[in-house]
Length: 454
Image (cartoon, rainbow, N blue to C red):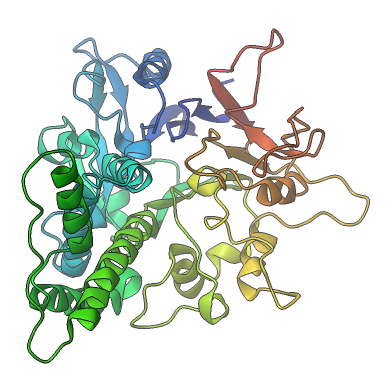
């Protein structure tokens, strides 16, 4: 029914592609949040956009009109599908991208430096003779070098292109005519380096200076290992390590170069967290309903989950600091963050047997029902797929926790012999990887419809 709000979560594998139909002042607005996947077939993305086109109104030019396209952050599981070929038949009125994606954003210089360093280090580590390390680096490199980002930044057709953040003036985000409908950006904050990078920028600069003094680059230790591997195979002689400085013993210098490689890996991981934590987080308010789309925003538990100035904070921790009122009221729909990862939902974390304070966020957004009472009509969907590369996606304890707080639950018949599987019959929210048709086939999408509160 067109008078109901519809959220359609497409089954694209390990990724997000979410269509939202919003009734608005007698008409309808159409939104798409992300279009990407990792490991999954491109055919799934094509199928999603083909269905999307059937939902959109036709334009005078014979195309299909999309009122808003949102790219939450620059990872391939969210932007891989943004090719001009795939969207050739879609006329896009507005394109919103995270402020962190702006290549000229003055308050993200440190973030860009970290990203550039991580890409360089990953490219070198992907050539490692160690298969496990090389495979991991190649996977991370693909995640971060999504071709969809090039299309979005350089030549993706859109009537209005805007890099958005929580400080964007409301008049610049006007989308709906109905005063009872509003779309808000809760994250990221405009000052990317201040809120999400913090002291990491200084640490990176110090590390790069130390690396230069040691005569190597980000993954220097891997260069030597690769050279030895080539020599053993009959190739050229391994590259000689730079001589130790006069005031450092050869043994200490060797340890220094090993620690440089380890620290390079730490910066690579931090760069991945930074991209997730600068996801666009959207709060849609529609006639008494509240829907939260979280991208891959992460939560950090250090310092009792409190925001700390000058630290690399998690997005949930920043939102808790800046928007306490918005996170203190229940939502009717939650897009479970980061495909159900353990660190992307502020849930029942514990420290020393006591519940962690950051867990209060989920208690506000999706309150636990009273003893013996069924969960209220609140919904959550997990767009996910289990892979050996990410054993905590989705996290089984989190799935069970959300299953006790939401109405659209399933007791999927899962095996119990793997760590990241939920035991058979335990209630959990609907998941794109497990939901099936009556005939046992994979579903192409999961729908949630909401009526206006009268």
